[in-house]
Image (cartoon, rainbow, N blue to C red):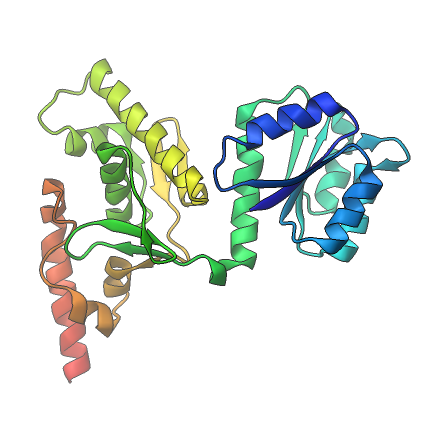
Length: 274
């Protein structure tokens, strides 16, 4: 995602830049203290998202975003300000977020995650995400398998996929992923580390929008995701033909899902043969 940063305070620009650079899928195309230069840049270059200060000399961020939208109607933006009285006007201009100074990594991450979802909706044909569950579980982005640095993070994602958008609570996940260990503070710490690693991997590939997580409860966004398992459960014949009686074969807990998939595959094949 291509972004620009606009603020008349150089220190704020550098802080924003530092916090954004932690996201490997983000390309900072420009940092501007002069809003007119930012507008000129937007007019001639591809830009998906802007962090924009609200109070600047000669023009407000609200006015600047309005002008930038004339050049790039789909441009997403988040406002940065020390004043909260502009929040209503900001959202009237369809700003995706509003950061109050002083802000930190969490606020920047939240704004970027919102922007990713909106940009992904506009550019969904450019990002092809496929989840393979028949046989072994793997995740592919634009034809390339995503590498997970943590095996447990990948297994946690597999469990979320298997739940088809259903909520997964910490204790339920721990019982499956650490089935031979008691539910203790130590194993809860391992679960939290797996969640953190999963978020990092998804963030690095611009996929954090998939994951909804809060206070030990998680679920996966399934809308618009290509997955052989989901297609089978929707009754698609090509998915039934691909199913070979194996589902996420590297995980022992996945065997509990097999009877449902086998029955569904039989129903789909029968419907199409009649």
